[in-house]
Structures are given as C-alpha cells and as structure tokens.
Image 1 (cartoon, rainbow, N blue to C red):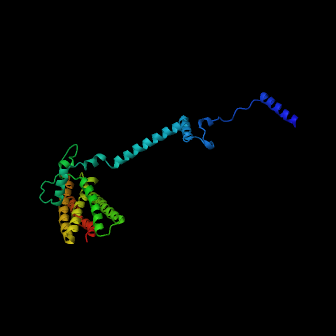
Image 2: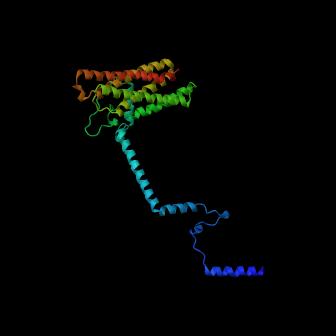
Image 3: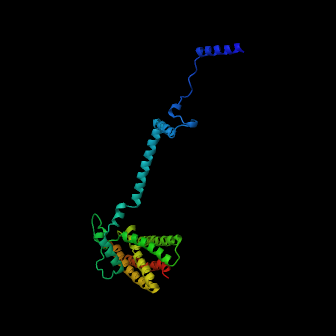
Length: 293
C-alpha cells in the first residue's frame, strides 16, 4: 500500500511536467459577477452584461437603427394620413371664439327673429374667424352644449331615480349618432341636388350641433316647471332653430355661384334647406322627452 501511494505521487508530478493542462474551451466570465451567497450573480449584473453585449454587437446595432427608422417613418405616415382626412388648421378655425361671440351667438340661437344680415363676411385668403363674424359657424358651442346635455341628462335621470351608467351612455351615443346621420343625409341631399358651395363637414356639424342648445333649455324648463313648461320651451326653441337653420343654410348654400342657376335646381336647394330645418324639432323631442316626466 505504501508503494502504491508513492508511485501515484511521483507519477502525478511527472505528468504535470510533461503535459500542461489544455486551454479552456470558454472564457471564464465569473469575474464579471460579484460573489453572492448561494453562487448567484449580483442583481443587475446579467442585465448589464446583456446590454453591453447587444451594444457591442454590430448586427444588433443595425437592427436597432433599422427599427428606429421604421418607427419614425410610421409616425410620419400616421400624421400624413391624419392631416389628409382632418385638417387641424380648419378645425382650429371653428374653435376661434371668445366670450363676446359665445354670448351673442347663444342669444341669436334663442331669438333669431330680429337679426338682419345673415351673410358670412367674405375673405380672399384666410376665412374670417367666428369671433369676428357672428354669422360664421363654430364647433365650440355645439361641443360644450353636447357635454352639458349629457350632464343634464344624468342629473334628470338621477332625479327620477333611473340613473345608471348604461342609460347615460345610451343617451350620449344616441345624441351623437343622430347628428352624424343628419350630416350624412345633408351631404347626400346636397350631392343629389348638385349644390355647389363652400360648406364642409365641419360646417354641417356646427349647424347640426346647435340643436343641443335648444335641448338643454327644454330639459331645464321641464325640470323646473314640469311637462307644460317643457312643451312651451320645446315649441320656442324648435321654431327659433328652424328659422336660424333656414336663414343660415340658405345663405350659405345659395351663394353667388348658385343664384343664377336653373330654377329647378334652386327649388331643390330650397327643399333641402327646409327639410333640414323641419327635421330639427323631431330630433329635439326624441332626445329629450324621456328626460322630463
């Protein structure tokens, strides 16, 4: 047993001098990690190593640059398509209002019978903003009136103990869908009647959205004075809105380019305007009668 032990010792030393250890197949990266109990690397060390490895990899750098280029190109395409369908400059024009304009416009919507001049101020380069022209349509009043109508509908439903988020959402979506349908009907009618005017979708949205003012007054009067007050306010606001729509749309649609047109075409344009005005009381009643009991 002693001989076997000595032979093993001398043989190991001889082999260590004759054949050195082969080089390791992989680099030892254990120095990159700080010693932790249990043999786990330090928190964040593996993440730092992966990030440095990706940044140092030329293929990864090219891929990141290519991805950034695609993202930038996609962003430009989205902005281009958005501006193609919705012009932000035109949209800003319909919100260029001030306090004086809003007060005068609300008075015109409630009592339009004494207003004399309904022509929109002409402009060669840039349209005159609504705050400088009372006859110019705007989207500020319809937008604020729509929001107020939804809040008022929630209050009316709460008073009647019929409030629920689903019912309020149905009121808001129904009011919005009716306006969209009305605008589409006006566009179709203008196309069939071959009306050539400067009226855009924003103009039609503005004229269609003014009905929310009458709806608010009708519901408020109904909540304060009952159903009798509601029907009186409904009749007044509906007649005022009809008069306002006829005068405004007739002046806008029958511009200088259409005044000298054939008589049948002018009659079609007049019928279109009267039809749009006559439809307003029906929509107002349909959207407000269930809020007053």
